[in-house]
View 1 (cartoon, rainbow, N blue to C red):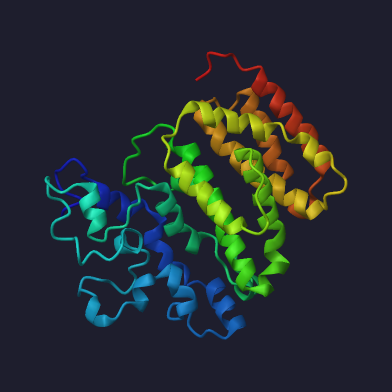
View 2: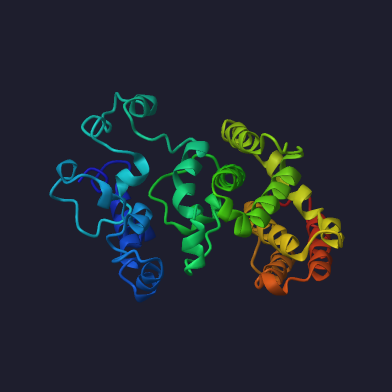
Length: 328
């Protein structure tokens, strides 16, 4: 009624309910594949196991007395999963005299803050217990901007440079979470160490800072907060793009193990894709074609060839340099 009515934000509920993949999160648990994971881990019915529903159906864990009759059996990831429990702000948050700060103070999650937004999403879009991964659960790579673009927006972004900003904040929060997991779950070291070090490398290149070993978790969180607290603009975005495309020499270093190089390249290509999107180039433009080649290079990490990737990355850097200065 409210978010599908005739007001300025009409259509929000229709977009979310009909197009957003979060509404179908619970359905995933009814698949044969999910049952196979559950059987391997002796979880019973995945649609009822807290190990699964914590992300795919959060309302499952809400006490019955807290749920209205309208909460369906297959609610999936609903409004309150992201915006926070609405009991304290639901009845007044649409009033014209209520500010965004008033809503946040009343308990609504401040998703306009990219640091808060990334922290809200990363838990389910990256954190994965080692035994779930071993059972066959797909690997999760958290990428806030790319995943937001893939999700039909039922909200508005007021800054045209919010994409690159969201990408960097998301990567920093992802590193924070990986570091947290490695410190608390020794079993994760077998699968997460290369991913963590690759992401650390990417953030060091992007930010121009050296990440300290002893306080890596704090450093990455502070980086996310700092970037989220600034207004996005063209200048830092182009500087970040230039810094990342200039890393071909790193992939020529034979002392770096191939698995780590492959993870670095994987993260790098995803980052280049999000930063390049701000240039609004045609799909057949030279940079877009070269980026497609880089994606092909990382399509199979076990077969990754550092030398080939380095050569293609150098070519990509060159075509970017040849873009006309007037290019937006």
